[in-house]
Length: 340
Image (cartoon, rainbow, N blue to C red; front, side):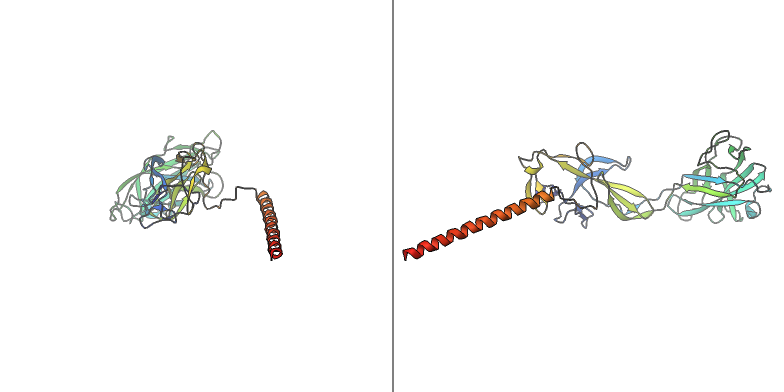
């Protein structure tokens, strides 16, 4: 810690933030640690005050959509999908919430239509209101958003558009909020597993109801800081309302050749001395430094039973010394009485 006494050390982990967002102890000593490199997300190795001034987590636009489906093999084939009549020209739809460059949530809908035996067409669309090129139909199919899925006789995905790779989808977004209009997104429905074993992330066509096994995308909205946590490696992590956890700093630990030689200042503060030797300062769990147990009380590091025995011995010794003093006082009183 850094404060009025210069560099000091403590075993007490009672910290909080002052009005400037600096991590301090109850005596306003500033806790020392390392900043986080925004590129790598790891400690930068520069020791200094720990200051948290990141009240917001910025948004991330969606760059990837992952779906895992089972499409019901018993469905009857119908004509190709028509965005003007999605209800009668599709068998199933999956709605995926995506995020634009400003973190605004948009609804992308993936329609599935069985067009022939073991052949399904998928169409990725936006609502007309969210589309940057409205057509007047309820939905607008996006560029690269149409594809054909072919399954083999065992229900495993055999090809996509006659090949093996899902094409990217480029969303054409309405931009009245100031976001980017063109947003390329990687679209995937799992690996092709024809002729091989079943993969839990693959899409299939089995004779059971159509179901979404999983649906995910990698975008998120902006979030505000809701909580702070310190992990075993001393990383101070911020938990944000958008579900993102970010490392904000890393608390530094110190070790000495002779810990008993440290000089006490009071208030749980210690400073180095000639007897303690110079400190070795580094991150937790590095070198011979231990880990941090956040939100935990340190147990006594002595043998309670032995200390209780020592207490009883000390008490008996005190009582014996008291009796000795009492006898001596009585003898002195008797001598004084004889002299009179």
